[in-house]
Length: 457
Image (tube, rainbow, N blue to C red; front, side, top):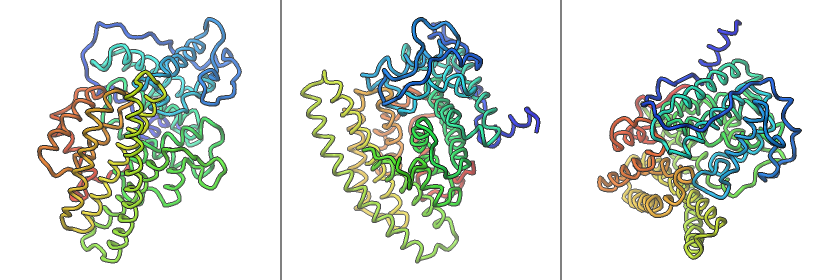
């Protein structure tokens, strides 16, 4: 297979294509933060890697004034992920994953990772200075180069499944956030990540970078699963992905947010099964009842967690209001706000699943969803605003789900206004009104609308 054929194969297979034509914006006269061009021939200039314990002081960085291209890129990236470690609004590792702390030691070893990191440094630097105003040509050019390098790396399974390539995938998705995210592009890239994880098999992570990346990539893949049919992942593959490929190994994760994530993962899997069943001309009564029992059991589990998080968040909120100068309390406030918001969203989806399986409108479920939507709206209006833009990214996900669960026209208008507000920090050239975009996105979570919603990645 020729190089050209391999590149085309990588694009078709994993969908990491150059989509710069989708980012239409006006040229700006404002300066952008400089970023060094990336080359792969200066790896020897990096200092030896050091141990990483989630401490910014442990990041491998060049000593003294950086002189080589790779030294400059490493120093710039390290500055980007550590410069604002006490600010939830622009904390990259807090918002996207601790794997970023391990990236510097891999720079210079993987062309796709170098290109993606270079694009992130420039786009994030400009975003921090100006917010999202319009598409910057220099940022877009770097991002396009990163996608082409990634497409080339994904041409073979061996390179595609390397830890550094997995890191490049995640960083490319991060970069798209700052150049002005395309909703269709983000979904396509998440689909590419799903394929890579499917192809890597069930082997455990071989190093710390891969372990952290696999845990991080679960998020976009689980939300992408709402767009996939039930047969795309086998049960074993789904367990591997949702546990970060550590199921059955001593390195299995044990972190506080696992409760939310596993609840959403179980909901996505149930959603696929329910959609497949309800799409049949004559749904099986036995299978429908079995799915309903699964939904009720999941509802009970998530309800308990919603109740716990509500009380915990209220306690943290009161403490932070008494001492707004405490950065520790600010991070606690952001963390529990995010967990509460996303777990409440999960419960809304479960209620929708139960309603679809029962085939009748449930006043109890509608009332519960109305209460949950009200709570999420209050979180968006009164709490998440302190952490905008990065610390409040969960709001855009949650209000989209609220739009599905709400039956009140007045509440839907409120949700649309919140969506418009939070999406304006990231979305490039939004098409149509917020209500139109939410209604379009909602069909992927609405089991009453089954046509044209299953995609093959």
